Amino acid sequence: MLIPKKTKYRKSHKGKRGGKATRMVNVSFGDFGLKSTEACWVNSKQIEAARKVLTKYTQKGGKIWIRIFPDKPVTVKGGEIPMGKGKGAVDHYVVVVKPGMVMFEIEGVPANLAEKALMSAAYKLPVKCRVIERSAH
Image 1 (tube, one colour):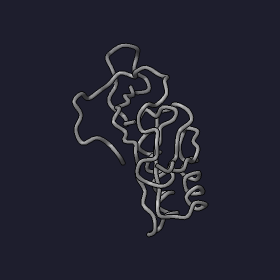
Image 2 (cartoon, helix red, strand yellow):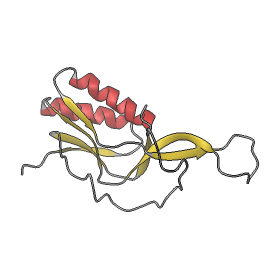
Image 3 (cartoon, one colour):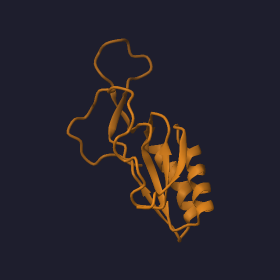
């Protein structure tokens, strides 16, 4: 699972929702990318599930880039704890995905196989996605 080795602060605020991505909006490394079309929190288990699907499709031929990393701690309090008494313990880590953000990239596989692999990985994620191709510079 993906978790940060070290953080400056143990717990964080939820933060503001909304806005479009201004960084990580283009395919930078591979030939094809998986781009989000809505905002969501993606946790480390979901990223790992998508990565497993992509490695199954690429086998030994292709290369995968995971452009997102879960570095935001999410806290949870116990079931029968009353209101108050402070913030709960860190349960898991998430990454804030904004609309237009490229999350995964792939290269070294044919176009039809890359699209099939990325769409299969998109099923594992809680965010709606679309496959994009690298624009020719």
